[in-house]
Image 1 (cartoon, rainbow, N blue to C red):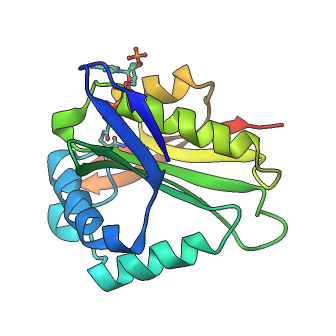
Image 2: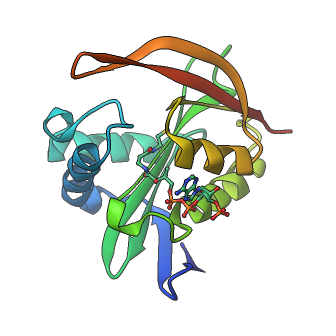
Length: 178
Ligand SMILES: CC(C)(COP(=O)(O)OP(=O)(O)OC[C@H]1O[C@@H](n2cnc3c(N)ncnc32)[C@H](O)[C@@H]1OP(=O)(O)O)[C@@H](O)C(=O)NCCC(=O)NCCS
């Protein structure tokens, strides 16, 4: 667990997600889904129940090459970051990064602080050699965040999302470690 300073004179606690966080995370994820069109799901489309979320957190806790952390501001979970790897030997050195912050808290440095925490964890973890992610090509805030941390655009998925009849392309971004 660490405490970090945010831009707005607030402090954030970052720690690993715990089974007791499940109901908050389900509600927060649905809220972010409704606040942005940049996720792969909308508000009514986040299918994890509290029990499934709890099982997910328990499952992650048992694996070395997975990370699931929460950011807590004002005693409330306002952000999550996940890094999920494959269990197969040929691809377990790489994983997918996902990050979401409640809209009210954007621009305070929360995304950056979560990624700082992630890279400290990743660079001391021999199992993590490559970070992959997908981001909508018009999600400039997220793309700038990833570029700031050295991610490079490695490819493009055409028609990566379909929202209300309109297709959006996605960038595949990646960063190597070690
Ligand atoms: C993308 C997201 C995670 C960023 O989190 P955040 O807490 O707002 O990020 P930060 O405050 O740490 O800002 C990070 C960087 O974003 C960029 N940024 C911030 N505001 C921006 C803006 N208005 N336009 C473009 N880039 C911007 C800057 O590079 C900033 O770094 P800097 O402050 O050092 O200049 C958050 O906005 C979010 O959850 N969005 C919705 C879900 C999402 O898009 N997730 C990513 C899916 S791939």
